[in-house]
Image 1 (spheres, rainbow, N blue to C red):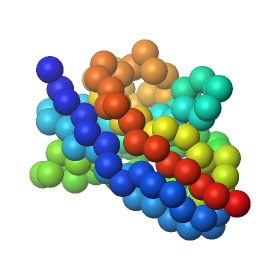
Image 2: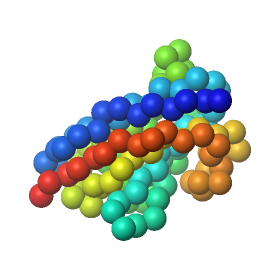
Image 3: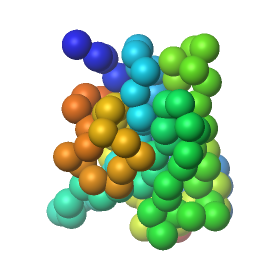
Length: 119
């Protein structure tokens, strides 16, 4: 069983930055998803274990950066130029299917961390 633990969420003003972290054991592709109140969970970004290939949702491309430190088994999501519409619970996920934006590609999920962006 893989345990994922997210951290780094919080309250920030629009235009500000936050960095999320997710600690996970094992060699998995790691993704970030988010769910705003009353909405479905959406893909944010993913990074491959071996290739380091990345993929981003159009809504965050150019503002968010996903990275990983394999030695520390940790994946990061650097979020810059935050907007109120980025407010959501952010989930870390681990999978082996590939660099995928689809939830079905992930087997393990964290419990989420709240990010709130005030206007």
